[in-house]
Length: 368
Ligand SMILES: Cc1ncc(COP(=O)(O)O)c(C=O)c1O
Image (tube, rainbow, N blue to C red; front, side, top):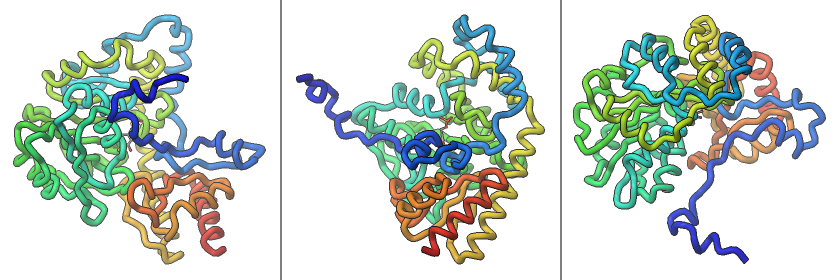
């Protein structure tokens, strides 16, 4: 008989695990679909247009070099991001998805006796990572499904090390504006690191994107997290990056694995950055998709949270039940009971066809 449970750190034993969107192949196996093409996954806020074509080309070319280790310093990718954002390469840290950055923040800043502040309906990985490092989690109620920054400020304790703000936030698809962020940043105490998770920022048109790079220029205790998983359609590749003052990036470099980003991801991400046309097509598809869903929810008298990016929360009374039934119709959405929203499901914008199929399935399920 093994004794793993006895040997594990006490605080690890009862940790929850992340419940991801269900993979298409798994649903096909479980529910007996013969063809995976009968199933649409609108569950993980991925880009329905497929990967950036420029990224695909670059990755095909990179295949013949896969016997080599990647450049552990990600020289060319950092140079390309730095040039695009007008920052220094030394202010960047590429990682295996922005999820890895959250973990690196845990290694660097969290431990027993420390804590984080987050919103109660913000991205769940923050609290899972905090729990892994035995840090305390303060969850601050949202206001109108939006981060309540004054309340989050008031919740900061002497032991707080990180405040996480997802902007735009998943799963609510809401955001706080630049002025509200500025007011928060002016007052946040010096013993706290502010992590602004901007996984969806490039889905907003430039005029709607808060200028958060200025906090880096002002050398504040701030870390921005961005990803190639959403706007650039490269979720399967696992690549994101942190932007922070150099002193912070040096610390994060000390705790990361030597080759935390693979060579295919470096090639794909660098090319994707140049694909402005693809980003424009994505923004347009998202805008039209959200307009369509909102109009259909009004027709069906369903209440929803107005969405700013490529997913939307809608109240269907019994979210898990509707999720299960929609899956049988070939549509995978996301139940929200894990976020304390048992009435809601979250739907990601798909292709036009998928969006229509989704509404048809929802209508059928709700009318039963
Ligand atoms: C707000 C937010 N942050 C981070 C992530 C993680 O993204 P990545 O694929 O870069 O790890 C997600 C993914 O759903 C997200 O919604």
